[in-house]
Structure formats: C-alpha cells, structure tokens
Image (cartoon, rainbow over all chains, first blue to last red; front, side, top):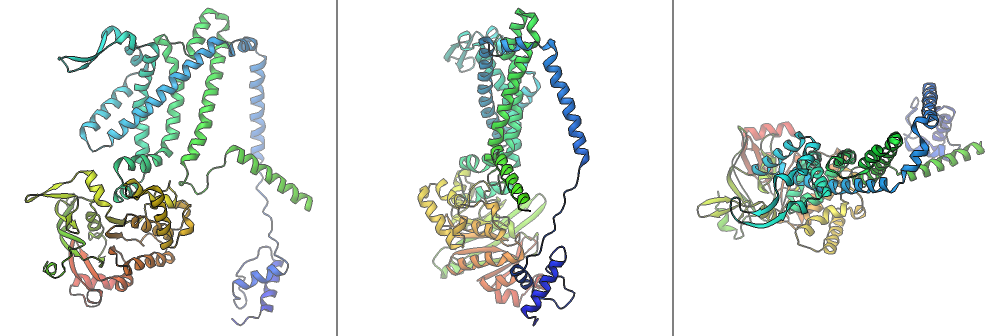
Length: 348
Length: 262
C-alpha cells in the first residue's frame, strides 16, 4: 500500500522488458493499478508486440483456380463466333429493343408500386382484429398465389370477351356507372393489373413478415403513449418493419422484372417480347438477341441492387450503432490505411 | 374501505374497483381493490406471478379486465357507464385516455429508429397537444431534468440501459400525465446503473407526482413509498405505510417474502 512512486516506476520498466504489459504482474506486493501505467508512459512506453496474421496458402491457390476458370470463360465468350458480338452490338441500342425496355420498365414500376400498396393493405387486413378483413385477405392471398401468373394474364386479356361492359351499381339492380371494357382495358392496363394482382399476394406476405418482426414492446409503448393508430403504423411500426421488408421485397421485385417477360402473351412488346419478335424475323440473330435481353436484365437487376443497398442503409438507422460503409467510404478508408502503412514502412 | 373519500374531497388519482383478470384458466387478478391518492407514491411488491405487472397494465388498459374497472380522477378508463352497466370504449377513445397515464416499461421500449429527442417529442405532437417546436423545447427541458441534455441527438441503442430508461421516463413525462406507472424500471439494468434511474424516480416523487411503482428494490420502497402494497396470487394481501408493511408485516406470506428478498 505504501509503495513509493519509485517502486512503481521500476515495476513499470520491468514490464517493458516483458512482451506484453500486464496491469497485474502481482508477484510482489500489489501496486495500485493506475500507477505503473502512468509511470511507464512517462518513461519508455512498453512496446506492444505485433501479432503476425495467419498465413492462408489455400486462399491463394483457390484464387488462382478461379482466375483461370474465369479467364477461360471470358476467352470462350469473346472468341466463339456462335455469340456473334457484332450482331449484339448492332441490336443492343436498336430503337425496337429500347422501346421494349421502356415497356418493361413501365410495367415493372407500375406493378411494383401497386403491388406493394396492395400488399400493405392485405397485410394490415390480415393482422387486423376484424375476422372479415382477415378472411378476405387470406382468401385473396391463397387464390393469387395458387393461380399461375400466365393464367391470370390470359384470363384478364380475355376478360372483355366475357364481360363487355363493367358497371358499378347494385347487383341485379340499376347501374350508376358503366365503362366500355374495350376502351378501358388496353394491353398495358391488362398487363399491369395482372402483375399487380399477383404481386400484391406475395408482397402481402413479405409485409406481414416484416410487421411481425417488430418487437411487441414497440406496439405496447406506442399504445401506452396513446399515439393514434395511424401514427403508430406509419411512424413507429412500419419504418421498423421496412428493415426486413426491403431485402425481401427487392427479391420479389427482381422476380417481377423478369416476370414482365410474360406480358408478351398479352401482345405487349416488352424487352423480351421485342427480342422474341425480332428473333422470328431474323432467325440467324437469335443468340445475340438473347444476349442483348440478358445484358439488359443484368443491368436492371444491378441498378435495383445498388438502390437496395442505400435503402437498407437508410432504414438501419438506429438499429445498428454504426452504419455499414458505402462503397465510396470503403475505398477511402482503404486508401488511407494503405497510406498509413506506407508511412509506417518508411519510418522503420 | 372507501370511507377516506369523505375526508379527502379530491377524487382518488387511481381507483381499482374489484378487478378480475384471467389468462386462460389462470386467475391473475382476483378482485383487486386499490385506491391511490393524488401525489401519493405507491410501491407494489410481491413474488413473480403475483399479478403486480398485470395490475399496472390493467390500470392503463393495456390489458382489459374481464370484470371490474379502473378510474382515473373519477373517470372510468377504457369503459363508460351506461346506466348500471359498463360499456367498452372505442380504441380511439382509449388511446386518448392513455395520454393521462404515463407508463415506464422494464425493457424501456424506446423507438430505436427515432433520435432521443424525437422519442420524447413524438407523443405530444402526434396527439395534437403541442406543435413540433414546442414539443422539442419541452423534450430538451425534460432531457435536462433526467440529466441527458447532451444526448438529444443520439439514438437509443447508442445509450446505456440506465440512460435509455431515463429517456423513457422523460418520454412518459412529455404528456404531462396525472399518474406514472413504473413496471420494474430497474430490473433490466446492470447493478451499477440502477442508482441513476432510482434517483430520477425519487426526484419525481419529491415533486409531488402520483406514482405507482412495481419493483424488487425493497430499500428504495422503504425510502420513497407513502404506501407499500403486497400482492400474492392475484390478491392484495396487505397494504400500509412502509414502516408497517416492511418491518411489522401482519401476514405470513408477506413475512415469508420479505425474509427471502431482504
């Protein structure tokens, strides 16, 4: 207890001789834990011994194998005349293809938004206290998850043959509004309605899963504060649910991008539709045309994935103590680390 | 039992009238009667499963009692009188009543996606009591009162448990409730963080706020309680000033419990 500072210093310098400074070497009388550190800091600081990272030769071998395989694949892609890259170049930005791409984008965006909105309504209905809403929501989801999308589309396409006019009124009684079905249901409308109906059923389950993932305590706290129901949903529960809804819905969205290729069957020329029709006009170009479509779908999916990263990052606010770095931040920290290491090397 | 009403002209802050609550076959609250005077600090003790937390949750109607009712300053909570009978209120009306009862949870239940300031300022804005700038000014004021003025822009997960619970208390205070219910406010905290939360509650007790506290901190109960209530198996076994209930309990169950926890 009555250790003089001199004793503390000597024990501190003794620690520097060892590899790692321990606060309690404690063979002799226990010194106060603070003192040795301070003393040794004023004297020569104890050198922390570097830990050499584990060598992983397996990784280098695996990298080499992957690189060789990738090179072979690229080589085949470039040199095989079967792919006809000149024709790919010819078709890639053709107006027919771009028109198709635009249709694909339009159908996707409309159906994704309508599908998500429908899904939210269905999920809320499914989780509500009302047995009527719960049943309606369940039956809808059951029905549209059971019927193949192509059947829904073809059915809607032929809808105008079954019902020439649509009217809003009392069943078996007078009609208030009457619509001419053929004018209302353009091919675009049929496609969007069909995809949205289908999408809503799946989105409902994605949204429901997200809402269920929010802790019960959050509902209770919101309720105990007397927050109005709508506020509870819009500001407390849904934003937290989005954290798990976003990755699942993006998955769904990517499926939707490709499902739009089915609208070809309701005579809408989307990206795949234009490729298909050009392919039948120029049978020799079918492979480069398919490559064009594949490349565009790849680009669309990549864009969606990038957007996903930032949206997820936004909604993880508060859930994580530190947000994951953006690619730009990663590059920056990587560079500054390299610079720091270089400085350390030169200092040696 | 209710002769006290004739003496004190003010209606009781909280009155629990013959409340029964079942969870399945389990009779969690068995005819509980409790009166809390304005400004009084009531501490509810009892073994786990004795119905303490359920009682608190019935008071702000997070749990609906199957029989009996609770009134706040004489007004029934969650129900209205319809002649001789009680009718359930709409959810909207119940939510409006909750603004007058603060509730502090064992697990804080702060909103993790909102900043500390927004956690505190949300309710007065959402319920239309204050404008956003007013609510934020009030929130900063309350955060200062619980000693967290510098944490306004942090997110709850960046705070320690004790700090989170203090934010939760500020959040409950933001609606200026007539009574605040604490459901084991320190049970989820590391021992060294308990003190800071108890200090804030003590401060509230001294300022004359009506408090009902479920806790296992017997020493704390002795220090701040005006009345200690001991519950077991869904019933109030005995109640009275802390010196009486804690030091000279009348019932064996109370004595038995105290001998285990003290």
